[in-house]
Image (tube, rainbow, N blue to C red; front, side, top):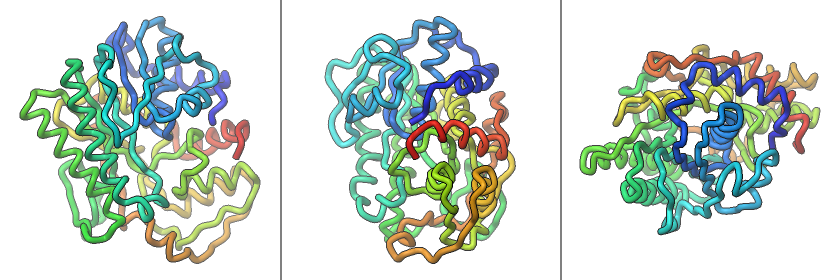
Length: 349
């Protein structure tokens, strides 16, 4: 878990310079997936903003375990700085929801290792979970719902040009690993359907590969494995040739992009979230090995690991549409890797 050090708060303050705090003054903001990698960082930003700018936001952190939520935000107090709400994406929401202005729905199984073992739950959490949340948003007359989708919705295509928001390739829908991108595609359509049929304000975020100090202990994605190994001063193990080119984004940059979309994103539209310059998986592994003074080793993956691999052979996203809203990345790739290790070394790897 992140230790809320002065340096981390300073980075949040720097990242918030591009955003307008007044839009959220007195607002009620409901976050699901608040102990996950991305939404927990959004929560970090909102907590810090509330504290520094005295915005009097009412923050609702939804999750299955109050203990996990409190452990993730040790510098803040449940009931004072935020209100905990029990939430399971596979169960109905509470009937007594308070007034909410903005909802960020990020509760989803995003760990590739679980896609092979829990494909049914992965699909239902994305589709049924969003369905229930949209009805709840309609009931409390929320201003806007932001759905956290994924760059995996693009699938595969022959061109290696960066994916713009209207570019779609093929997904093998009979491959169980497709449970994740297929569910994300269906959920995005559900957002569009609610916008058309019920006038619901929805906006969709499509993050690329996110890395940073808010990784969880159970995250099996390559960037998370590299981070934990580097923090333990162990060799970085790469189980491919590492030549796949990907868009990566540091967690705080991703969080400010999501807040930008809450404030400025066009209703019914989707936006890529990524930094401008893509890198290969090998370059990512080499960067973590360099900053931790360890070695990079190659191993063959197991059959089970192969089943969890991303189906996209090329996952570089075009971020011009997001940048047109005024968002800018603040953390370069080398800076992001260095800061990840600085913060993560203060936690249990």
